[in-house]
Each structure stands twice: as C-alpha cells, then as structure tokens.
Amino acid sequence: MATLQAIVSEKIIAAGGAITFADYMSEVLYHPTLGYYNRMDMTIGERGDFYTSPMVHPIFGHCVARQIRDIWKQMGSPDPFVILEMGAGTGALARDLLDEWDRLQQLKDRHDPIIGQQQANPVGKTIALRYLIVEQSPILRDKQAETTSEIARERIEWYSTLQEIHDYGSLLGVIVSNELFDALPVHRLTFENGRLQERYVTLSDLPGEDEPSFAEVTGPLSDDGLVSIFPDEMLNLMEEGDRFEVSLQWGTVIRQMAAALKEGSIITIDYGDTAPEVYWTHAKKGGIRCCYKQALVTDPYVRVGLQDLTADADFSYLQRTGEAVGFTTTWFSNQSEFLEKFGFLDKVTELQRMAFKDLRADFEMQRMLTLYLPQNGLGGLCKVLVQQKAANAE
Image (cartoon, rainbow, N blue to C red; front, side, top):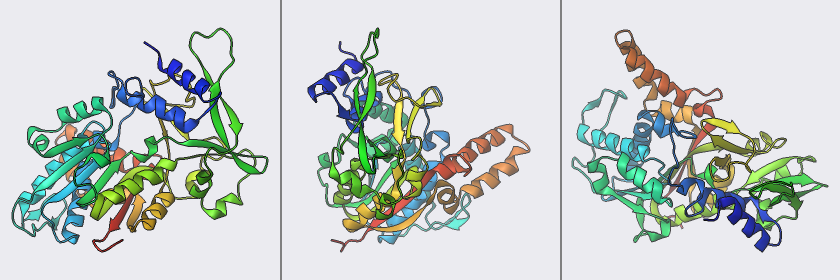
C-alpha cells in the first residue's frame, strides 16, 4: 500500500513540481484512508494528540445549550427546531448539549439552581428537536455514535456534507461548530520583494531518505482572491519576511452554512482573533500549529498524517463573509466571557462549597478552569462568534 508521503509526492510531481500548502494540508488531514482524521488508529483526548473544550468538562456543552435555547426563544420557539453541528469530534458536545437541553425543557417555569435564573418553557411541551451532525470522517462518526446516549442517538442524523441534508436551505435553527475553522486547509503566504507571494510545497532533494520528504519554495499567488482576505490597512503595513496563513475555505464554509438556514444563527467557537491582530501574532514566525501526543511541534512535514495541523481563524473575515450573505454579528468575545454569560461561575461557586468535603469537587473545578482561564488558556485563545439571519433577510 502506498504511504501518504508517496501519495503527496505523486501529487507534487503531477502538478509540475509544487503544490499549495492548502493542497498538502488537505491530503495529510483528510485523505480518505490515510489522512489524520480518517486513520483507523486516530485518537483524540488525553491519550491522543490533543483535546477540545467539550472533552474537558460537560459545562462547556451545557453553556452552548443555554445559548442555543436563548436563540430558540428569540426566534419565537419554532417547532420543529434544528441544531446542526459541523465536525463533531468525539461527540462530547452533542451528548452534553442534548443532556442540558432536555434538563432545561423539563424545568419549565421552575427556578434553575445551576444558573440562578428562571428558565421558562414557552411552549410547555417537548418540541420536535432535530440534531444533525455533518462529519466527513467515518472513524469519527463511529466515535460520535459511541459517545452519545441511546436517547440522543434516536434524534441524531449524520451526513458527510451539508448539501446532503434533504431540507438544506430551509432549516430553522442553529449551526454550531467547535474547532472547525482552524482545521481547514490554509495557504502559506509571505511578503517578499515588496509584494505578497505564496509558499509552495515541493520535494526535498536531501539524499539517503527512504520516504519522500518535503520543502517549501516561493512563487506567485495561486489565487488572486487570497489578497481579499486581508483588511486593506494591513496591505500597507506588511514588512519584508512577514508570513501569514489564510484559508479560502473560511469563506466557503460560512457561505454554505448561511445557505443551509432559512432563519437562525451560526455559532463559531475556535482558535483565532480578529484582523489585524490574528495575523501580526504570527507574521514573523508563521501560524501553523502541529499537535502530537499533547505537545506542540513546529514542523508540518514530519510524521505526515500522524500529527494534527491547525491555524488560527480570522474572525473578521468570517464576519465580513456572513454580512455579505445576510447575517449580522450579534455577539463576539472570548470563551471566558461566553462561559460567564451562561452560568459557568455559578457552577464554580457550587463546586467551591463542596470542595471542603469532597476532593473530587476540587479536581472537577480545576478541570473546568482549564476552559475559562484567559491567560494563555482556552478561555482567551478561543473566541466565540454568533451571527444571525432573520427570516426576511435576503
């Protein structure tokens, strides 16, 4: 069987000696059988290469559920209602979100002891909630089915692409993603000789290697549209040697999500920031992160298909793209503020009271704080964007 290195090598040769980094990243992450997310032995979590917020503690999914429930009520409590998750990882977010949705539904008009608020059920009955998951990886779809409960699996529908959904374009609901955009293939750009150019992947000429190896070479931009991702003011401030990672798929995916909804919201939770800050942070060193066995490594051309590759998303571009197709930004901040808004600190206070008598409560609280602490933690590095489309928006 051909190795992934050999497959990428053949693609480079067929393209005349070089491919974009986006093409390289697409192969090493999403090749149907050998790509990182489609390998039979791919692992995520404490024993894998990385973990995501839903894996840390159920409170993350509970807070997302409360946000979605608020949106549902603002929409007039439509029945049926759709929650669509893009790239559901291990299924932890789906499990915890549905658990909290059901808990809130059962509260009806009673006081919620966890978040200290009234959580009225406007319709006073169980609504027809559909939970859709769009997941390209059959390996991850199996993991998601294992993670979600029997009750949850009865309402979950799996699709490989958005366009497979039979009522695509007429959905009433919310599309949510966690760490989706940072895993979309990016182009590597550099500012050299007074203009933006692109870094391409080519074959290395190092002797004595059993497997093909890779290097980078500079050339003209593969797509003029790459320039439009940057805000205009950045183009005049770039300096010789600056390096940037951008993805045309950021815009493509937002437009596809927008087209799926007749009315509702898009909730994006991901690593990144708004421009120009998101670009200046890695202009001098590049912005690709490689994750292997819970460690960050710098070389994307080693352990091909065995390590994760990600790059920070430009939330300004996501907002501009959404506005162009009828969406307005209703909320943007970091993950810490998002969690605060939906009762995270009330749960921390509850655990603090219990910690004097139960060491497990202290351990649980420490796990939760991993999601929240803003200094170099998930609370500050991850941002949350909520975009809304009204029923009469064109």
